[in-house]
Image 1 (cartoon, rainbow, N blue to C red):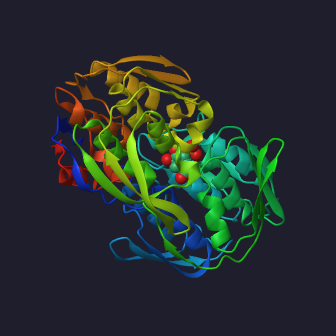
Image 2 (image 1 turned 135 degrees about the vertical axis):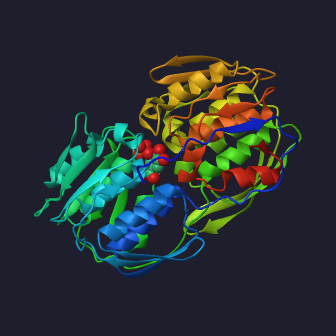
Length: 443
Ligand code: S3P
């Protein structure tokens, strides 16, 4: 879905206490992977709780183009009839991954070791993002990639007809790169080894094992060593997608900064590779209780009871970045309401997300009267007792930037607008209704 419809400006006003239950949709990372692994298994995978955001819908469409049968039976209830590892057909049309870096990079990996050619594109945001980080390691399998300057989409991938297994150390903390290499390794003979210096989200590893692949993870001197045995027959699964902690972050953070709030957010994943924001919020003094801890869909989950809190600024250690990489925009909003400075270092990966998130947050916060310091790899937000607000912030086709500034507007003195709230539909289509249901003034 690379076409982008008309911009939808949205405005958030200072809101009364937020109250009630926030039912968060399915995890985006796990939703993409369920469709892709379902397409690479032999037989029917059933998925419940699939996130029906545009990013995931675009991955479903891509899997159909490669020959899998993907059917929606009801809300969140999907099936994928897979074609098996190495069974992808050559798509007859361009694969349009819309706004989704995860979608395009994982699908490129999944098709890279089949003797087929596919051309990928995306929206204006995705066409600016670097694909070389994925096509470089895919080249080691024998895959060829022809894209625009700087490794940008549109890009044609010629799959390796005789792939060789690969040993690759991922140069930046990136679950997408790790996952693309592992998915490519599925159709290569022998063992594909991926080494991560810093651990990133481990959904691919958990799910590959769940679908029957042989995969081990060991600590080595250079970091975590992930070894996958190629050419397994993946077995179809029943996948219950847990709720997305990155989406839960928005109502959770809103409840922390809107006076008098108390909300319950049931069934949020507490996977340690996704948990960094929650660890940081507790350090800031957030009143969050983790109730009813249990396992759902293979992930540790808990019900979060969140109450408005007096927060203090903290230094977020750089090694925590991979476990909260998508949560820095909303953390920087919370930080504006905390006492003292919040220092976020080691965050340069934010510059190559759906937008340059350091720049987008810095400019919007300044426009709302918040003092910040910005470096290539660092953002510091100086908290204040009352945040003025009163600006229209640019979202640059980035869902998390849009939601972050709308949350800011719920607690600022003067309403805050975003120039375009439409990208929210990529990851959290129910955001507006959910927040209004809790008592937010959002129009
Ligand atoms: C994701 C990995 C992260 C994250 C993205 C989802 C995934 O990207 O930002 O939203 O599902 O693997 P990087 O791999 O670029 O860090």
